[in-house]
Length: 446
Image (tube, rainbow, N blue to C red):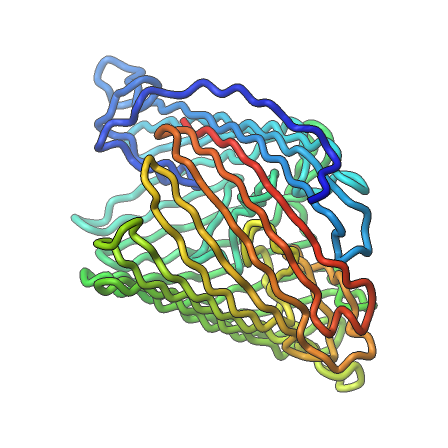
């Protein structure tokens, strides 16, 4: 594999072992509940009565990625280093709460210059206030305003973009209502546009997001999501055409665990208009796993199958390309270059717990175009290869090997290797060299 950049050496101080009852550290740090801990910098009382409490935290990550033959040889070899630091402060006083998380994010060596997912300098990633209103023994309403990361469901349509260097934040308001097993989120948000300098990220009216997202998880663990998401983009682009986009997404998600089996299936239908053209798009995404906890290395088999519609004929006056809006950053794997538009995908994989907090996963993936009248797209939604004159649909196949070591409760080390070979569509329409990809990462969450 060709690697164009040098290795980065990162020193990280490992925190003491976590207590057994500490909350899991997640990507949405504001969901962590440290009440009752009073350990280190967590849940510190700021007044004599203990009504005002402060929790401090920190994330630090270094990630090196290298690519040989990006875009199947249509771009120069690339290798870059991502660095980000995200301290946080969570202040709670009775029903009122303030959460602040700055970000320091830089990239070194990105071919062609940094994009919004690579670098932001020093800026505010999250800063919001909550008012929590108790309505009964098991009912509560939270009113939130400010800037936050948002993850709805499986993050297939609205995610944090956590895998790349700079997460996707939103400005606006949110209401969260819970009653027993039911939760309803109502959102009115503007996507934050990321600048390359310090303190220049800003909420923009260009891309707006409104949503009603309902979740029900009964005691048996069988979950159901039902939602509506309204999306507006004043400067959308599909193929060679640009214009305003108004898109409504209606979705249903089924998820749960039963004995060895777990599932996460989602269906989405989109309607609206783009530059005067009606939108008729849809997607089906599934993930099904079966685990063998009693077997050696506790293998876990997984199958993902996805369909996202593409555009048909250029003269049919209908836009059929599915829009994944703000999806999670690593949609089909750690290093896959393709995103969820005009795609049919099968992705089997198997993971093993080999002991000493080390897991290994091997996965394969095959990709086809859903429509031969449309091209292929990356995860953010940019077209990376046009439809061309080929009627072939097979884009290519990928194999990926990844390993993760949870070296300490707050420290993880991981690495990935992948190869993406071109299929008949790419061979008939342009460059078709195999892409080789590698990634190394050290992440610390306190």
